Length: 254
Image (cartoon, rainbow, N blue to C red; front, side, top):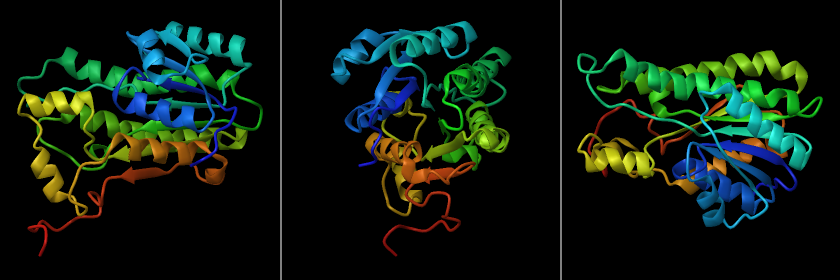
């Protein structure tokens, strides 16, 4: 397991799903955590079994909320070593039934929220160091029908990470992306229940034949957060079972 002992880490979207799984992995690796989300953060801290973690309620689209979280981390921990931007939303619908407000909401949370989180944390990072791990997606590289806001947002996150890796590298700050395939999170389960996510189809197109687990995504984040990845920046790390490598559609097993 990657060692994160003593690292002061802000995790957005930490109430459930990938954010919660990432926080759990980082807790086990010895990190000091700030759990950030729109609601239920005290309950998340209790479920995590991390009484020393900070639980902060706020929205990643609100710069003041993020500034307040960083201020609490600075007061409690003395600063911020790293950030995981796991907050995210989606809309699944064809373009002619999506409203402009729905499209903007996805971009605001997934892209602007990521940018605002990094912007808030930077002043509290140590001189000559610090890191950011953003949650991307295979849909940041591949298109998918009825998912134009999500695909656009994750593609933007991937490029945002590369731009910031170049900009912040001279300051010693590393910026990377973990890009999962489908993961059975509450958000994906909701899509499955609504009949707008083909779990069998995703698994069938994936060379390893299944969805990823939240724990596998969290492990990739922990690696990028650790000193073992000290020379890794500007990278998009797929956790996708070979999804992006697969350019040939065939029946699995042949």
